[in-house]
Structures are given as structure tokens and as C-alpha cells.
Image (cartoon, rainbow, N blue to C red; front, side):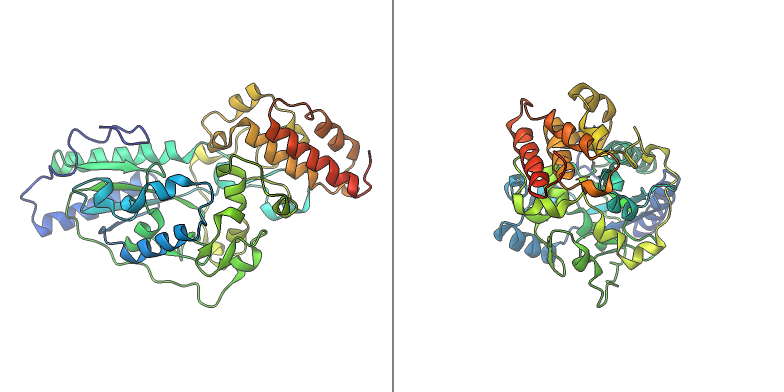
Length: 381
């Protein structure tokens, strides 16, 4: 059986766990798993049980308020997201692992925000699609476990199924969920990816991490669109990551000016977090920027044909937004360019005009909005 990510997990599924392992043997195995995880490039791993009632209540309340927006799959999956045993019957434990992704030498996002003609891509999406990187490593970890125990039941997940990955990671001791809803680690901040192995092995669990946010509200104050409505409360319908990636329709007009030049995702709440002073640079070459996306110019990206988009985003998480979504996002950013601060304002206007007749009504609508925005400001026309 394959999971939704296409991984062939094992010859056996949860329910066929090897018997006869003593508590001492299971404890020894847990230690070996963590050592092997580090050897495979994960900075930390931990083990949790499947009890997530508190997080389930938070999830259901969030869904009840409609804060998931058009992500209907969040509601459709029901409690399978918060009950690992419903998603994969027989699951007793979850092995959670994290991998740092912020590579050294990147142009600071804060600098890019000051240059409205530049495009800002969320730092996690600059290199190879993390789903592929982590999935491959986790599969190797699962194979290692099988070598130690014989066939056992497991499934590998990397943001590929209804999994409460941050809640699980918190229980596994990898960090705590901050007020911005991201996972935080005292030694690594929040610039890391998460992946899981659901298993039927009754491994010893780790101690959950403690919350160290204190009275800090910098992430709430820094959110450009006010999507963080309060501590641990995020309205996805206002979140720029949702607007530029998950939303397939028109971006609400009132939110467009607040998006600035952020064309794929948003990292503002992470930049201001004090704990990210302790983040560690990633040595994974797969996460290095591709196609100059570290600090590109909006006009240049807007000129990409669909074929160029597909070629240059091959193996990248950016593919998720689709070509029309990509142009939609850039059109909004071009509408937010401060023409008084660019050397060639005519270039911005001409780039938008060239897309006026684009086949996609979604793109055309956002192009017209951008042109009208500049016209209202008595900009160069």
C-alpha cells in the first residue's frame, strides 16, 4: 500500500508488529533510531504517543470558525488528523524528526522588503521541494529500523496526509508551538522542516517540550495582514502564505496592498522571533536557492512563460501555486511597487500591460487592479 505521498512504506502495515521486544530492547532501539536520524541529516528526532485530545479541540474550534478558508480538505479529513490510529490503524507511536533549511549567505528578507521591485519568496521554498528530501531520508530511517527488528508496520509522512505534525513534534520534545502557530526550538528557532513515521512499535516516548514564548507578542505585531488574531490563533484567510499558495481564486482586494512584494509565502513572524537568533545554518545542498530566486526582480519573474515556469520550478515547492497563481501573485506585488523608488518605472507599467490579455481571467483581474492602483497614485503612465 502506498501513502498519499507515493511512498512504498513497508511489506507490512501497522498491526503486524514484531513481538518479543523487551522494554530494554525497545529503549535501546529508540536510542539507535535517534543516532541514525542524525546520520541521515536530521538535527533532532523524538518519539510521541498518539494522544492529541487537547490539540484536537483546538483544531475543531478553528474549523468551526471557518478559519481554514477554502482548504476544505482540512474539514473533510475530520478527526483522522488528530487521531493517528484512525489514519493508520494500529499506530502506537510517532517518530518525529526535524531538519534545518535556512542556508547561509541568503539575502536578508528584511532587505528585500525594503526594495519593492524585488520579489520575496519564503525561504523554505528557495531550493528543492522539502517533501522529496525528507521523505527519502525518513524512508531510509524506516529501512534501518526494519533491519534492527525485522518487518514492522509503518508509514512515512511529510506534509502529505492529515497529520498534526506540529502537535506531534511538540509531544516528541522537538519544540513548542509558538503564538504564530509555528514550532519553536530553543537551540534552533523555527527554520526547519518536520516529517513523521507512524509505527506500531511500542517505543518509549520522550518528554514534551515546554513553552518559552513568555509575554512576547512580536509575531502577532509583525503579521502584515493581521492573520495572527491572538496568541495561538491564526486566521488562514488573511495569511499571506494561504493567499499566495492555497487560495486558487482572487485575492481579496483589501489584503493586496498589505502583501507588499511577498509572492510565495511569508516569513515575517519568524524574522521577528527572538528564538531565531539561535537558528543554525543548514548544510543541505538541496536547500540552496535555485534559478536566482533568493533575490529576483518582479519584472523578470513576470515575464516567464508557462514553459519557463515549469522548467525553473521543477522539483520545487513553488509548483504548488500553479502558473496562473504565480502570475496573480506577482501582479499584486507589481501593483505594490513604489514607482518613485525604481530606476525605470515605465518598465513596471509595461510589464503589467503586456499581461492584460492573458488567457486567465484570474491573471487579468489582478493585472487591472495593479494598473489602476498606480493610476490612482498619479504614477507614470
